[in-house]
Image (cartoon, rainbow, N blue to C red):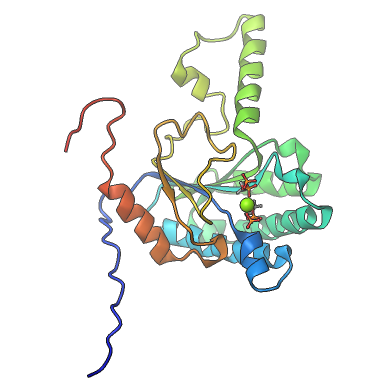
Length: 248
Ligand code: IPE
Ligand code: IPE
Ligand code: MG
């Protein structure tokens, strides 16, 4: 008698009611490399490939907004060579994206304190943003030098300036949201974090107030389209109440 290994069942995703906005804390590149006796930077290289694959997948299945946390305001604490490898990978990714923006019809935006980045990278980001502004496909938001607290402070400072100048509108949640990097974009429905860590690490504290959180042990370089399906399927089983009572 043969031994049959049970095939994992495909996650049951309802592609007709997908989350509009998915945000991902892509984590575990360093551990992925360490497990293979490779330098951490090798993990970031493979992680960049995963970004390409997953961004394409989200575009193809019809996700409206994908927000990726790639470098935090705290990640400058890492060794110089790791930071510079990451910056080079960002430059490569943005250059490459500019080349396919027309073909793919995507919009690109960047969340974070961009002035802390090299003028070269800032220029590329500007280019990508401008070239893609008129498109109505999936919007990819890349968070680089992003910190949620920093974002809120900046928004508060900008509002305070307008207030002093007498030009500020009355402050409401909706108005304040308009001062954040994510102005005009719906809050993330689903926030995914890879690598088994169960924390937000300063990611979207305002926008994620009612996001569904999904944690997986899969390390980011290994994260597959199937893993994305599993996250979406789990999201679709959740009962989002927003403080009210169940509608299910
Ligand atoms: C995520 O992987 C990428 C960045 C935060 C830039 P890590 O580099 O944090 O990988 P681990 O957590 O050390 O495994
Ligand atoms: C969060 O990952 C930041 C990004 C994914 C860009 P970290 O690896 O920096 O977070 P901690 O240090 O484990 O909280
Ligand atoms: Mg990490």
